[in-house]
Amino acid sequence: MTTSNGVGARRLPAAWIVALGLACGGGGAETSATETGTGDGSDTAAETTAGPDATSGSGDPSGDPSSGTGTDPSTDPSTDPSGDPSTDSSTDPTTTTDDPTGDPNPYPEPGDFPPNSGPGGPSTAFSPDELYQNCAYLDGGMDGDVGNGEDHDTFDHHNMVTMFDGYLVMPWAPEFGLNTGITFYDISDPCSPTAVGNGTSDQMRESHTMGYAQIGDRWYTAVDQLRFELPEIAGGVEFWDVTDVTDPHPVSRVEVPGFLYPDAYARVTLSVAMQAPYVYAGGADNGIYVIDASDPQNPELVHQYKFNPVVRVGQVQVVGTLLMASAAEGKRTALLDISVPDQPQPIPGGEFDIEADAYFSNIGGGYAYYTRKEGGGGLIIWDIHDPQAPAKAGAFQSDGNGGYVFLMDEFAFVGESTFASIYDLSDLANIQQVATLNLVGDLDTATPIGNVVVIAVDDKADKDQASAIAPWREEVDTKPPTGTWSYPSDGAEGVALGARIGVTFSEFVDPKSAWEGSVRLYKTGTEPALTRVDGTISTQELIVNFAPHKLLAPNTEYTLEIPAGGIQDYSGNPIAEPYVVTFKTAG
Image (cartoon, rainbow, N blue to C red; front, side, top):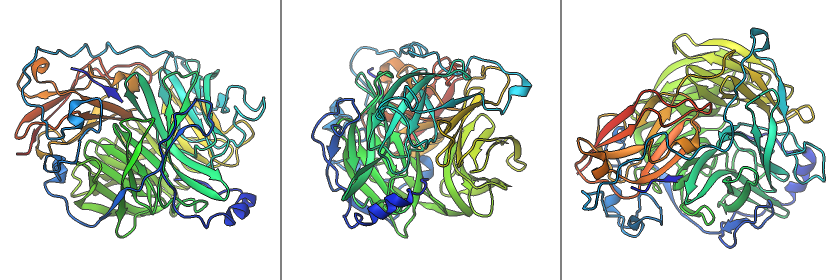
């Protein structure tokens, strides 16, 4: 998180299920905070033990959730909207951003953020004959399967990738954890990738989401976690320090109550959404876990939200004060108001069923995207611009079996088990399948990175070939990202004083490019240097969230500005046109 100053799992091997059958009588997991990780992937990462309060999703929030309103933290003296101990407001949550009395504090230029260490996205063009053909394979670790069995991938279970600090980030972990890690690659020449850094863990499990946040001078990400120490099995969320890509390492873990394995879909964590300083974990039948990660080396489980009736939460995504939770291998979606970040509330009209079971989902541009699992694969898309009145927007049925979905520009990239698809979404009433890609194994994931796509299988891979890089466009990516949606929406009124503001973009954004110069909040119609609101900025794939350090002033209009030349995509293309949102607070 940048502090500005001014589901899907697969089944455990049969032999292990027998062993686990003797050990699953243990109860829920615990949470602890004792010691700092050493970076060697051992069990010295900090553990956290606590029992959060829990609420059930049955009541109605106050206010208008479609405008980002709801329970106002200004009425709850125990609630700090930021959770950031580095700010004075952490001990005085009723402090608002009233007119300052100090000197002007101008924003830095939007593009003056510290440069990435790595070269960024692919810089190679391709011929038409090379498109959709695998040109390289990725095997976790620095040395593949050469070595002593500790620093390389032995299970060949891969999933989604992202980029950080100019390098490709590839987690490698089966659902059952054990020998796992994160490897960083230089993919400037994508058909000749080079590993530049690697870290290992014995407690990371298959992860389908990765967000990034800076606290102080350190950068962190969060992944799903499982501690496999017979007879005890526990799990939750694991935090990694990725500041130095040559030495990424786990630093802490939060083990959550109710965790049970090998019941792979029912009682485990399946996704992690980072909206600094909070993290939201999808806990299947256990609902949603809310973690205060203002100190990622000592995170704290602060709340567990349970649905009634149960929603088997797979994917969780957060944009501003809107949280979307979708069922793993089910039809149900719930939209929640998180105006009070550690107290999610149901939005009237915000629970709905799609037409068929979905394996997983994603969010962008005011739409929810689902990978169809029942009766074929393909996509189902719902319009959630108004969370109180979601509506179906489009669908395409293939002969696949849905996995995960990611977005870039007008395209969706979907793993469909026996192949991966690229869909053209230019016309949601007439979605077109424009290409397919292939890789041996259970091909569940396809992640666009510039003009290539990284496809991955999480089971039955050929040895050392669980991920492959394939070109999907001829030319190097030079198209800038654009803002596609915000929450609260432009023109919203009655916005909660503790609101965070989220923006989705047309493609994944470079985490370091989202900083105080490129994400600005100030009072509308004033000199920004005099009324700027300082806050915490975090990214998750194509989402950028801004969390003010203090409550906003009541009955006041604010402007969120994403200036041109700041936020960049993975290929270093900065946003060309400003994206501006205005809203008015309650009171």
